[in-house]
Image 1 (cartoon, rainbow, N blue to C red):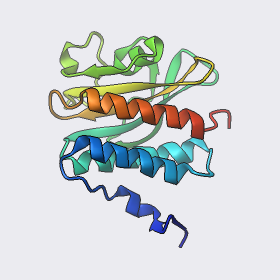
Image 2: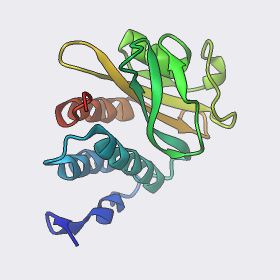
Image 3: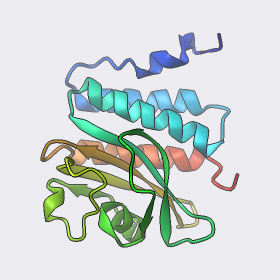
Length: 181
């Protein structure tokens, strides 16, 4: 069995920190760094990242129902295509400017939505979702490569601490993933 830093890969999903959101999200960042070291395949890295996100937020008793990624299509650069995720099946394609994901992709700004029912043109892949955070993944050349998307079954599921660490994760993803392959 291959280990990283003396840990089995699955050990990275065991988050300790109780209800300290900042501490757990710091652990998530460190875990992603360790798991992506030496690996630049975006499917591989984002698959692990979606699992880390799921387990980190679950450990915090955040009632998430989806964590994952939408990636900008190579052949249609104004559309996001479903990427690696945890949760129920989801919308396969989202146009830039549509819904929370498309808005984050087109504006290149993180969207923290306390109540998705109040968001103009919200796309309800899962009608039970009540809040959402979407963070754009932006290349060093300023191109939107994709978005990180987390959904919650409660109102006000995400805030400034989540924004801070998920934006840090987005920067790490740009550094560790080759989106051309």
